[in-house]
Image (cartoon, rainbow, N blue to C red):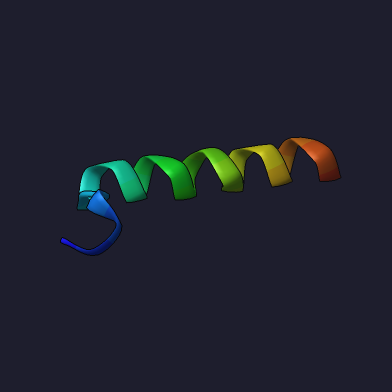
Length: 26
């Protein structure tokens, strides 16, 4: 697994990034 990041971890990171972006746009 390149990078050692599983699908669940990747999904969580993407979700966190998305939510942070949404909060910033407000």
